[in-house]
Image (tube, rainbow, N blue to C red; front, side):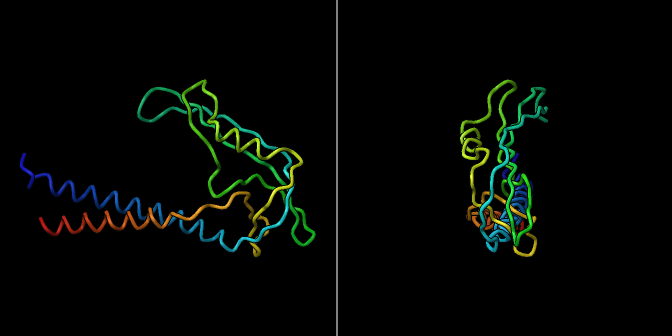
Length: 161
């Protein structure tokens, strides 16, 4: 098979990967952008636990353990009490082979939220019930930009064929 024959497929793959990365980066960036305007207040941890669920990997017949962190906390805004278990834009979690313990970093994160602890809570002024404990870090524009670059490379390659 000559290089000329596979170039259309490579270009199409680059375009698809670029679109996926650009969309994922844009979604993550939008989520982080919304958190910029969140206001900080103090809250109190009611409980923290790591929950396990079993799942089948789609690429094999093996089962895995999926671990996720749940932190229930309360806080007040203008005298109104709110309670939620939303840790961040994405719930922290790890995956391991069946029977394995959760990742050490997840256990350490759970241990940092002990019942009765006072913690910073970030909430949206216009929607006080929308709150998180952990703000996302920046860096998502990099994923979006990388996606656009790969997409542009695929389009350029497609036009050169």
